[in-house]
Structures are given as C-alpha cells and as structure tokens.
Image (cartoon, rainbow, N blue to C red; front, top):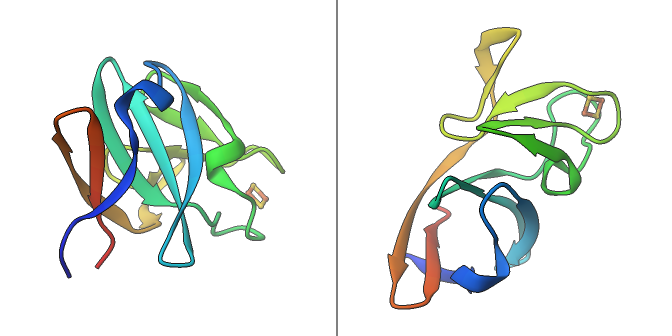
Length: 101
Ligand code: FES
C-alpha cells in the first residue's frame, strides 16, 4: 500500500494528537517533538477514539477510560504485549503521509 496524504504538518502541532480519516479508516496522528507518528485510532478496550485523547510526550491516554499507548509503537503502556497498529509516516514538503497498509 502506498503512502497516502494524512494532513498538513501545520495542522498537527508539536505535543498534539489528532484523528484523521484515511480511506475511511480513522488514524490517530501525533506530533512528538517535531516527529510524526500514526497509530490506529481505535482503543483496544472498548473502541475509544485515541486521536481525541491527550498526549503527554509520546504517551496518549484514551479519552474514554484512560488506557495509555506509546504512539511510537502502538503498544499499551501497562501491557506491552498488547497494542494497536502503528503505521509508518513520512513528511513530504509541508504534508504528512502515512502508510496505512
Ligand atoms: S475505550 Fe479506551 S480505555 Fe476504554
């Protein structure tokens, strides 16, 4: 699957996470100190929207019940054996591309 455009770099400020739709699939796109990371938007617990959670450094907390995920890997902080999909990202000019394969 080729990389697809996800957002403009200016739309995902450092220290924030956003929900973006890519080919009908919600993706959580985070900016950790200027580097972009993309993980599945859907929390493993009950499907909460991770892209609407709060980001502290590289950890996003699910807005529904607080499960925490490392956005650089998709792993659950309290149980790294579990995790959501983590997608490769690439910046081209002023746009962020994500490989949601
Ligand atoms: S749905 Fe994410 S912590 Fe419950």
